[in-house]
Image (cartoon, rainbow, N blue to C red; front, top):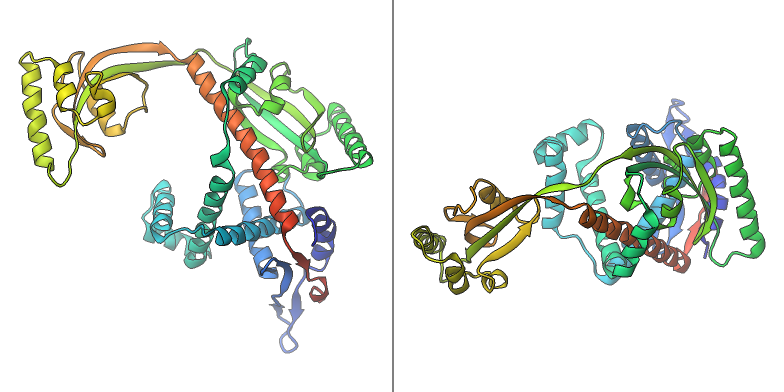
Amino acid sequence: MIKLLLLRALLPVILVCMPAIHLAAENDEPVLIDRIIAVVGEDVIMLSELRVEAGKLEQRLRQQGVSPMPSNAAIQKQAFDTLVMNKLQLAEATRLGIEADEETLSRAISAIAANNQMSVPELRAALEAEGVDFDAFRLSMRDEIVIRRLRSREVTSRIQVTKSEIDGYLERSGGSDGRQAVYLLYILIATPDGASPETREAARVKATQVVEQLQGGADFRPLAQQVSDSSNALQGGDLGWIEIDRVPPLLQTYVATMDKGETRGPIAAGRGFHIIQLADVRYGTSTIVRQSHARHILIRTNEVTSDQDAQRRLMQLRERIVNGDDFDTLARSNSDDKASAIKGGDLGWTNPGDLVPAFEEQMDQLQIDGVSEPFKTEFGWHIVQLLGRRDYDATDESRRDLALEAVRDEKADEALEAYLRKLRDEAYIELRLDDMGS
């Protein structure tokens, strides 16, 4: 069994042997000879797969405007690692019976087309015009869905965040200077699991030297491409803009007190030594939202109650309310939304986006105390009465929501890394170096 570090050590050998171009004897035209370059469990990686994956990665980097562009060897190395991990995850998903059904796949492709303001046939034509086989595109989408479902089932669905973790995060973040978002650059000098004191010390020395180079004026991005073990190394360690309350907890204490352009590190934690640079800062004010206070009556449709029946009943109830009957009493005795019915249909104060769009659209058109005509949503038929509107300072709630996401994301990243490392460590991986000769 070959572990990841060994794979990384051997990969330059593969890349040296990469040119699988033979000259045809008759016409001296280059001919691509495909071959197996690695065995991963019961699957294989073909040279052609590596070329395709490296090509896609290079295209993404160019679209992201990464500058300077990484070397071909660095791109091929990451492409190879990606292929290995994808095959291991797909094999594990198969073992667990995790699949992507045709309906889910079709919806995902339709969503991609819609996001690009295309129909599915137009998307297919656009892909084929770029030389992308549509069937291969569907297969890659299916694999992505399967991998997401595997990660959700085995990792992210098991993540829990406590109130004390959120409180601790907010206490550490500070934010008294009004920072709204920060732009971060990041380098990781990793240490393997169970690293010896000597190995860890060597990594610390390397990280210290990197920090000294940065503080001496070295450009962060090309240096990150050369030395970082982070998954975003090829992007120059660029983490982009992050809202202040979503900064990873590991970096939060440092970011809260850093000046623009400052570099901190090496920070010894978890999987190695971390280095960050604060590239830019945005300042903001309080989060004010327009809240609505409403109550409603819901009539669900079923085998007994048709759309016409539900609409007719609500029209009768609305007429009674307009003529003076008590909304609270009618909601308690008629609404199928049991959670709100016991409160007279009261939904409390809600923020934009809390309710389904069709409901909010009707509610937003009402004047205070106005009662809507019957309307339909995915839950059934409703009438709604608007009781009030207010501008509400939701800064604290917003910060807690963002803090929750930040803590959960970091815990999920750590759990995912451990899960993928376990898959690698338990896998059989064989490099076919003997087959790489020209």
